[in-house]
Image 1 (cartoon, one colour):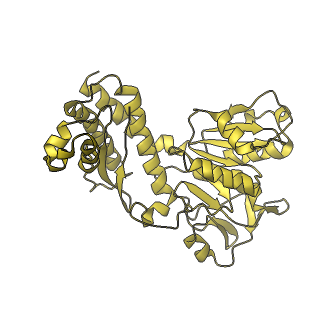
Image 2 (cartoon, one colour):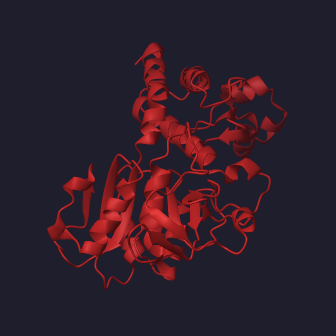
Image 3 (cartoon, helix red, strand yellow):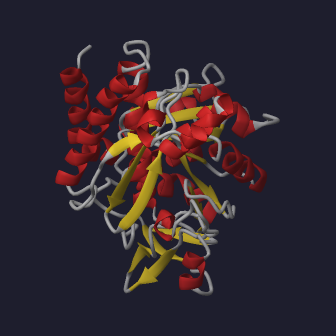
Length: 350
């Protein structure tokens, strides 16, 4: 396929990213022995949930996810007595596309295992309960108890499906900060809401008759060379995750096997990515002052070439670019997501 085609496809992805982000796909893990004839099932509307397949409690959890405005909910059902419920549930999902995952009424061990697995899944984020993950793709909900309107108080772990739907259904053009949980009457707040937020906790608080999200943060606390302050924000990480997913999908579906890995052909791909980013800037998903220049990560490619040719340490930048490394492509770009400057580095491997 020629250069114009890949550019057009990239532009179409950019033009639909806000809509796609507002209609996220959530995976909800449930433990249920009501109907063991299936492991996974997908719903596009709460009214389609079959009462015969779930306990009343689990059916309610699925309905809670839909309250966030998600496009689909994929249910991964495991037996109540399953030895490794989270591992089994994730394996059941396989390679299905989804954005966020959480578990209904999970134990502490379940939450810990989900954190462990999602940290190895770069295209997926998770909502967990009281699990200090310290990671940019894990949201740690910690309110001890919440009171739904017209119902009895429940423990916070039972509210995970509702938080899952909230973050999964939030578009990139918005934030969950100060969002009102219209289904709640009140919550038990942490002793110090601000301190909890600073500690990477996603918490709700009581505000003049309504319940609000204190701030849309994930569990990231420890910052460093590749971990920045703004990476604590869910909306920032959602944007970067969507961009990374789109770029990798385009590479896999419309580049691999259709182009030889020469520098000239890499430029074809880079230009497509660059125009995609420029469209995101025009739509104000990225800052309009972003340069969006996509090029070879010379430092990384030089390091790889030096394993084969020690003299590559002295090669010019252009010579490094011209000497590709097997089937590997190493793009790098600098983008500004809203108020956050991020160096997005994505390694694309054949």
